Image 1 (cartoon, helix red, strand yellow):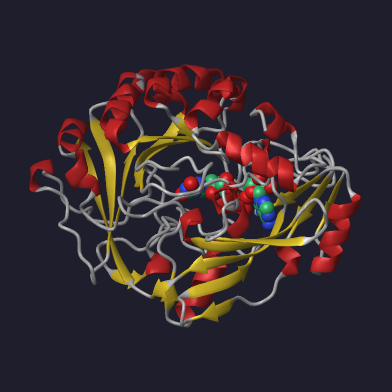
Image 2: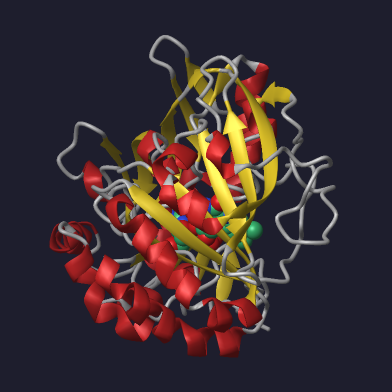
Length: 418
Ligand SMILES: Cc1cc2nc3c(=O)[nH]c(=O)nc-3n(C[C@H](O)[C@H](O)[C@H](O)COP(=O)(O)OP(=O)(O)OC[C@H]3O[C@@H](n4cnc5c(N)ncnc54)[C@H](O)[C@@H]3O)c2cc1C
């Protein structure tokens, strides 16, 4: 094991020769300016080598500092290494909220937005879309700031760690709100797909979970409604009823780590993630992949997964199907298109999963499926990535301008042609 240790899932060991955690911006500037290769490390929740380097790994967790709230403009400036769950608590104590959260609150702000991390909801864009400005130490060792009105901002947030080490982010906030979460078990897939638009529009955030053990059923529908702005609810034709007890997305697993269900209203931060902040899984017995397809072909893509159910199910713990609104970041998997996100929580069978991914990706290729940057995908087929992103060359140009020394390039970026 090298000094930098492993990622959260334990499926990779970072190859960095050193891991440093500067306590001041000046210290960080010296590290970046003097090292030939540097990479920022967040909370280690990515499943591939996007956060790896053969040089120096830099954690910004020790930079710390308190968030600063600008309630007049509904903005918060927060340290890049802070975890979403911690910022959420801080905001809630002051009567504020973020628009949306991912399923896990333990991920860092900068790490999550760098990979295009998202939650669910027809009108909820990726977490990066809530970012209004980003501050980072570039390869010249200087502190840069890119804000929404900068021409380069489209490349600044979902930046795959390629532009520098972020030190602070400015995020849009809104007054705190309540969410009530209800889980509906066992729906007929045909009925769901026939009225897919109505199902995903039922509430603020809707997720479908299925193990594909029965290709004709959806195991659970998680509905997160805002009582202050209620949605129409699931269509009656689904014929589903709320679960009689709390459920974990995985069949037979205790729901103890899950956020409160049963339609009980509670603050946004205690309902929007599927898992509670107090429950901290130190390591994960799972792998993940995810592909985002345009919303317009979402049903057809889900039908393709149904056709592959017998191939997918033996490797799978659970699939989650979400919706994500289009965003403006050039490299966000949801960039420029309302999307359906097809997520796979795999069993920890790396070899078998990686052997299957090319087949899965070929099946999804006709839908212009874009892989989640922080999850497992077939990087040997990366030549198709530039064709999936209209602004790919623009991002590459921005990176060349900001990082002419190629300090932040790693094996992952080289593999995808950046
Ligand atoms: C249990 C689990 C649940 C998840 N749920 C979701 C989900 O609901 N939705 C979803 O979309 N994804 C989800 N993910 C994926 C996860 O959100 C991404 O992998 C995310 O990037 C992890 O953030 P991190 O802080 O661990 O970043 P890391 O994995 O440490 O790093 C990811 C990237 O961010 C860069 N980076 C980190 N910090 C900085 C910084 N300070 N400056 C510049 N670049 C930086 C790194 O260089 C790297 O390129 C989940 C992952 C796990 C393990």
